[in-house]
Image (cartoon, rainbow, N blue to C red; front, top):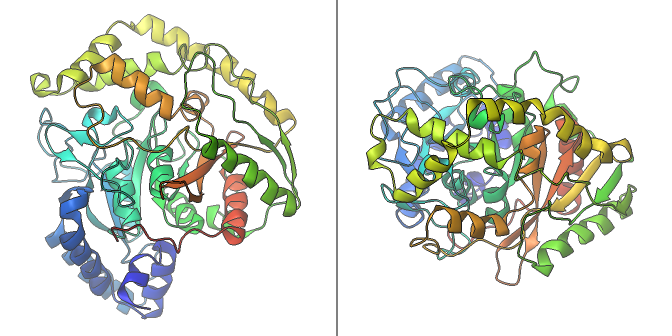
Length: 465
């Protein structure tokens, strides 16, 4: 296996190779540090790289491997999104308004370290994780390795660009309204938003009024399943034997609905290729033996405008008011926070109290189906700088039209994943989104792995790789 193949082998395969002694942890970490040094100046996927500490962690991991110790990610490098705390490193949230570096790892980082992972660095985000493009006044723009003129998406844009370009085997992302699934779609990766609270958020519990979750951006379904096995709250309902085992089992015959309907009151680009991917996937799944029909989700009229946007705006306001230097924020961010201030505690409490009713309405489709498939996006990624001179509301309207299929499932809290599905007419990745029942990541992983085996994607390489 040459260095490029190794860089794209994925976390699970690398873990096997490390355990078998086929590679060493220091050599693997050095491979990524070298690739970051060569490729990241034009991608800007990383906000900061922990070269010295990563080398030390890799040496320690190798000593443990040599001593016969076996952990799920022992010696495997991983990138961390810059809204997650790593002890001793500033959590900037894509802004100069941040405070001092935390002294303690976030719980998810602690769990990754406990599993043996080597922390490579922190990846770029849009300011306060607001946008599905990754450009900030403080740190500049992150570029898509499939087309440097395009955004990788956001808010986990740096994580997506890093994994897609082979600058990390896997990355941690967060998803409050599509922020794992959107950049995974536009960078050709497998990304999963797990069930709410599946992966602990501490010390940032209940982020964005319960909309946000942590999850992986990865090359393969097995990599994502491994991440979930390592980081999930074991007290929550989950598959017997773990997520990797679930991903390794072919699914039973499933009832699958294809839905291209956009939630009410949202406008969307009408890109035929995005919708066609859903029906192409349906044809493949019928050949694989599943029952597939066209059936749209019955979204409540208020699914997004009444139950996502108020929590999104208020979450931004809550985050901003905790910053020590809010005056340093971009004016567009301050505008979003000002809108969020209009949503009182009482109003948010009422919205959250009604969540079960909204979820029950949307979940009626699962009375008849096991999985729903939607487009991964309404169209491809915007050009870098496309929204530079726009205000908060106009930017939100334009970006929402590109990504209307994600946020409703943050309101319900149920799992959803995006599976790569070829390239569009511009040579940019397409995806389909798989939506599962609450707590049923296992079915999504099993079906995703079946699609991956029949319709593989991990051997695709972007031009910048």
